[in-house]
Image (cartoon, rainbow, N blue to C red; front, side):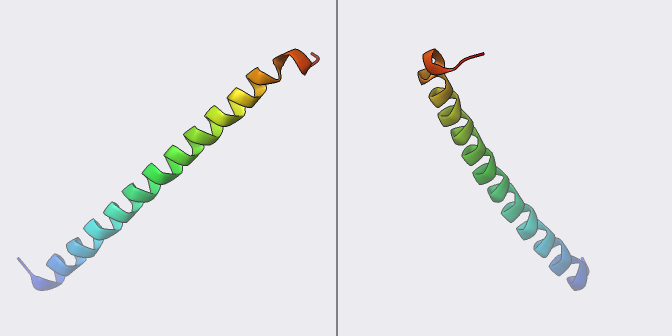
Length: 50
């Protein structure tokens, strides 16, 4: 295998790993924020006027 191609694939693999980790962190953070906001809405349901 050509050395330039190997280095390119290695950097692409590392970038994919970083993007995957960032996606997991962002997804977990968004999920936690949605759960917290949903809990707050349910706890204040009696005070909310529709």
